[in-house]
Image (cartoon, rainbow, N blue to C red; front, side):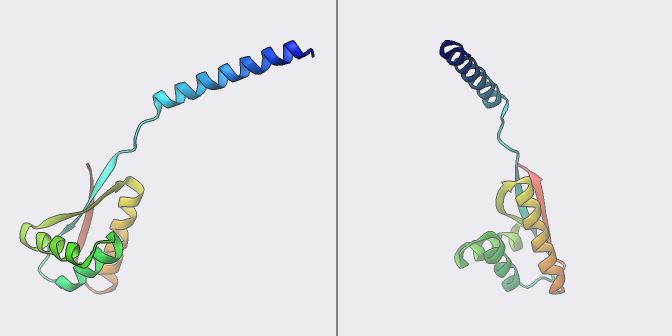
Length: 112
């Protein structure tokens, strides 16, 4: 193949690649986000809820305490907003930790 043909071929492939990239960019959308909520109950100790918030949601002691009080007073509170997989994982981790420690704490995630 001549140098001119190779250059034209290279340019055509480059144009095709750019067009495909532009098409992909236009069709890509952000993932849906989900709110993870803890629900109040009359049996789970407040200290345990604070511990879960610190361990699974990386909250400081003060943030965890404030969130725990919101759960207690309002019936539920937002723990964080995540993509589906992360929200599901955090919910399951909290529920397992509560069950393993004999607490009926409920944690849910809903589409934001």
